[in-house]
Length: 567
Image (cartoon, rainbow, N blue to C red; front, side, top):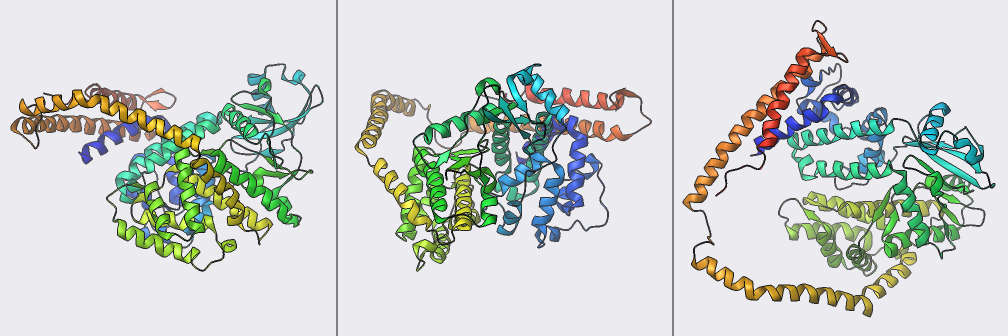
């Protein structure tokens, strides 16, 4: 079965990426150039992708050298925005990568050269109309900032209001979609080649990343996020979220209120930040995390402004995290355990949060977690406890026992680490636990409020009553099936016969899949042969014939999908 899954997956992957073959070759070559040739070699794709590597050894030792993280950062930066953003996502996964590589990935920056204004003008014409200039009193053609997906320009509306426009780079969607397709395929190959990649559910990570990236490419999603933040902080004197101008916004252009202030990284560098600023920053971050369950996913110094009136301005709300009420309850348990040095409760909560990939030895898991927590909690003053680092170490410990953390929690842990690091940079003596206490108290109060307990009781009553109503019908049916021989335990002759038929069916599918793969590979390999007659766009007729036959065989796989013999 595992062989069949591998063959079918490889067949579909090649169909998906045939049009991206040149980009696939480029990606493989970049990773080989930066010392990851051993990984490419294990995928057995060098011949199919026509990539060559000279000089550096392709051995596994290069994967564990002290400069592995730096080389990975260089490779991802060379490959462009999709890979840089995927590296940033990986930097939030201490359960997947060693701490040294995580530290390097956290240095990845999303700053790139700006595009020419004529390209920006084209985007504005497509999305705001040919007469887009008439909607503004002035428009600065020099960008305020430039990132991989879009760049920011300042403008003034006809009523004198200052605004900024976030404008998406032309053709960035198609480039990112192509790279995401390749990421999906590569993740599949890695899971088949390396047990570690399968355990960490690399394909699941790529699916989550693709979903997040698709939302980031749609500026209407960011507009919705900002408006939700504005509602959540409507009564706050600590934060300011820019107002959105919907009539001047689309999926590729986002027009918002101009907020003037200094970025936090500048404030920190100038040494002007008071302790009160750290308190305000923690209030904003903790309210998002612990009260709202809707938080900024990238609250680093470059995305926070210090306004003249002391308020914090939030920028770049494309990446957000969410915590359902049940998840927030777990956060309460974790923080409560930290405050009270209850290591057993801390261990139980982390275990309940985790997603086991194999049966877990709880005793060994508990011993590991307690040993880690003792280093950070026992005998350490509350003001010196580093919650973010503790969480990161616990997540690493859970991964050693094949226990993965849910994506929403890994993002929350990353947000806490970022919050702590920024606050410590502003005010080294800040006490994060003491600042978190009012929010935890509020969460506990809400958790056990009469209203919530009553609502939970009603939900439980409805669920149990539904089960109770089904018992009079279900129990007699169960006894009838037992008496009539319809309900059997174990394996009978008929079941064995069906299993044999299913096995024969799968062998036939495996043969067709193998033929499909061979034809796809042949069609891809002959692209580089210059003497063959060309059909179109530099693709020879022979490749077209091979691919057509491959698609024919692949169509038989799809047509027969799910048609295993049945009784």
